[in-house]
Image (tube, rainbow, N blue to C red; front, side, top):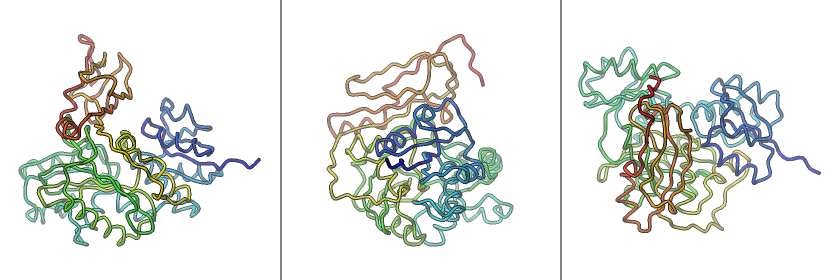
Length: 398
């Protein structure tokens, strides 16, 4: 009997479960690595390695010691960057660009510098280095100051005047592992994402999503397939994405991008090659019957995707991440929507500390609306349909 191919899934959080499930469905022998022993993927993998994969040399040693056939990054930048580093060093895994390209796409200063140089549509920006103040007059206030390498909106500050700038830079650097920050012009508009599956230098299939930050201003908590974006904007975004693919000669796989739209203008905000977190792929699958996890995984498994037999569907699904504006001791959750149309993925136990957004969440929900217009009208207000109750009189940790 032929032994099963061995896959290492880098990351063990709940967001990685759809990837683990799909790998096991395809018959692979799946190992996982991650430092948090209570993470769910440890319970279901054939083998677990309890290492901090953000330390890329530890992941490299693991892959040198073990005979994995494939390595798959999960749903955060640290997992993808470290896996890309290992693939670059060992030159025997699939689905990755060069490590230099990975760093360019996943660090904000490098991405801004590259995109501005090649006339892609992005906000004007400067690296927050010693020479920045010589050129700050080239930017128009208000500004956004961001950590160079963080995600989930942590460490981001909007500043309206020069006197606020240094404090914002210091705060961003505290939230950055490489102690760097980027300063960019704040652009007004609606927020969206674009998931494009690249194959042989072209976009094989893609999806556009409307996104809303209703609890914490720089973290998406509500989203749905977009029915509001114009074909003109979609084509403009695709044109820039195709240019990015060509310029960097990107390998087959997912290229996921956030962008802002204002009338006929748009700006690319950030891009990534890893799977988005918070069950983003589940939103696409529930809305369209498209197997997001399968298409994400195949390039890492040295396989090509095929859209010839796809049978897509249309359901009006809103995704919402439930969080709170302050630290509290979580008691219970009340739903103000019809339960038979609601899927809930709990992440907190009653009596546990719930940190304020963007550092924590109660769980994720998917709700099916009957009509397209209901979806469009209600997705941005999803936070109003869930009530987080707390244990009063019990002091939360600060």
